[in-house]
Image (cartoon, rainbow over the protein chains, first blue to last red):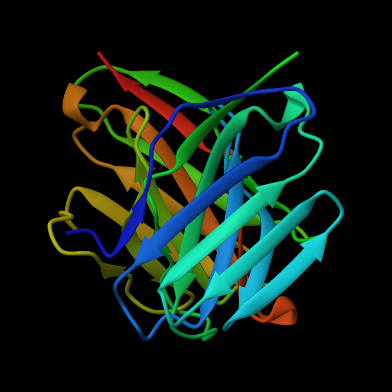
Amino acid sequence: QKEVEQDPGPLSVPEGAIVSLNCTYSNSAFQYFMWYRQYSRKGPELLMYTYSSGNKEDGRFTAQVDKSSKYISLFIRDSQPSDSATYLCAMSASKAAGNKLTFGGGTRVLVKP
Amino acid sequence: GAVVSQHPSWVICKSGTSVKIECRSLDFQATTMFWYRQFPKQSLMLMATSNEGSKATYEQGVEKDKFLINHASLTLSTLTVTSAHPEDSSFYICSAADPGRYNEQFFGPGTRLTVL
């Protein structure tokens, strides 16, 4: 079993819909949770960063972390065709410089006009 | 801010040759950089952690003699794929930890390597 599980999709939604993404994990040491967006043949771009449990909102994006269930979510409101990309969750146990990120497999999202 | 560049963005080489990929942090100094490999429709696989002024730490299963990493300055890390073979063809991505932003990792745009 992988440390971080993420549905690969693809997830297809109409423009304007809410996109709901999630990851589950098994390592209770994870404290920092991130969501990255990756366009085809590009490097990942950090979207959201959350420490421990709770919610965080930034524009159209909302990240939720439930450490008791080992479950994190990302919601994208008013989705646009430009949101079509692969979304990767990532986690780490600390913020030390050498600390590794553990990635989920990524969910491919397609927003149809 | 927090920009990381990679060069080249795309390279084709013959089997048996060596290829060097550069990763630069353009607006911050990074004591730690990371090298990842990504196959089509798959997630990022960490290959090694690169520390300025010391030897890189390789992940299990990654051949250190094949993937040479040098982190000679606080803004530059290089990955050299030695004696490349077609199975080394992949998308290589680096990231750099920015100490000014709680060691958040910022990723480069990636380098696509094709070995013929």
